[in-house]
Structures are given as C-alpha cells and as structure tokens.
Image (cartoon, rainbow, N blue to C red; front, side):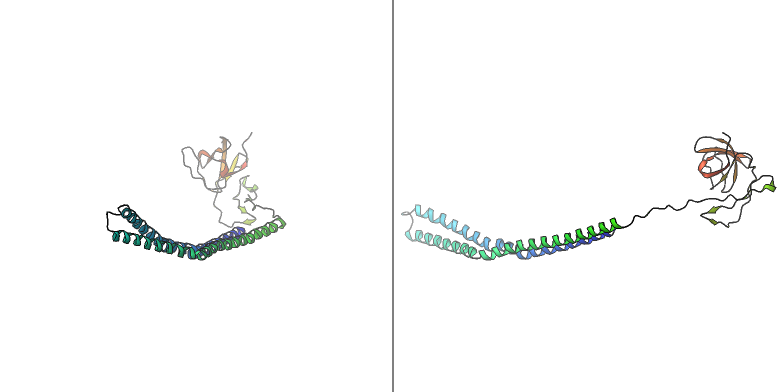
Length: 252
C-alpha cells in the first residue's frame, strides 16, 4: 500500500514536470516559430510572388521590343528590378536573424534536457524508496496466521433422573456462556438415533422437515452425504445434515 502511494506521488511529480516542459516549449520555441511563419516568411512569399509577376511582364514586353514604346519596356524593367531588390532584402534580413532562431532551437533542447534530468531524479528517488521497502520487508519476521477459534457448543449434562432424556443444553460460543432464556424442548430419548438443531430450518420444498434451533430430532434414515430423514412432533421429512449436530448416530 505504501509503495503504491510512493509510486503514485512520483507519477504526479513527473506529470507536473511534463506540464512545465510543454509550457516552456510553447513560449520559447513554438510561438516564435509560428510568428516567423505568419510574419517574416509570409512577407517573403508575398515579395517573391510579386517579383514573379513583374518578371513575366518584363519578359513579355522584352519579346515585343520594337512593337511597343521603349518607355513601357523601361518601366517594366524598373518594376522588376525594384521587386527583385525588395525580395532579396527581405530574405537577407531573415538570414541575419539566424542567431535568434538558433537560440530558440537551443532553448527547446535545454528544456527537454532539463525535463529528462528531473524525470531521472524523480525515478531514482522512487527506485531507492522501493528498494528500501523491499529490504525492510525481507528483514521483518514473518507472522504466523492464526485463524479465529471456531464456535463450539457445550451440550451440558444429561438428566439421569429423567429417565435418560436430554436436558435443555446451554450453547457455549468461544468460551462465553449464552444466557438466553431456555426454550422448552420436546423430549427425545438418547437411546435412539437423534440430533440437535444448530440453526432454524424453514422447508422450501415438499417433503422437507422444518425445525427451530435447539430442537431434538429423531433420526430415521440418512438419504445421502448431505441429507437426513427424521421426525419431530409427529412430523417426518428431510433436512440438511449441516444444520444439525448428531447426538446418537444411526446404526451402521
């Protein structure tokens, strides 16, 4: 149980460290990279597209030289040169920020390295705790399991002055006498096969014999290893063997 708590706490710490890594990577790498794509690269792409359009226009007019005014050709060339210069300048400026982009990549690697260092530290601490618990468990003396004592019943002494009939026994559970008021029992001679009811039994099927705890039942036959046939108060029927305690067994 305690070992599972240690492991769960370590997993929680690992999750917190991972959350910190995600936040740091987003702030120091993903967001700047997204800004580069949305702004600088998009601007360069715009200038290159404009340059391509003016190049096509200049090439078309140059092929028609002599058929179009020279001034129109000159303007097309100037616009092409202007767009070319703007595109080259924007690309140059991007390359000049190379150190900034490398530093962002370095921040990504540093964040991952720090995460793995902390993860290793957390797992090392957990492994040491578990090893310590294993050593403690192996050095702890083994405890022998002792089951609780089973319930026993004191049947009491038979009343010899009553012609050999059983008196009302007082059940004794785990050495403690129960002081419940005795219930009058029907007399049953102990010189014939009989048993004493340990629990109440309510018949659920035809032919079963019902009785109350403490009743003395005359045994007439054993149906199988689980059922007896007996008689009480003039009624006969079947009942389960584990509900009674045999006082005088049936003859073999």
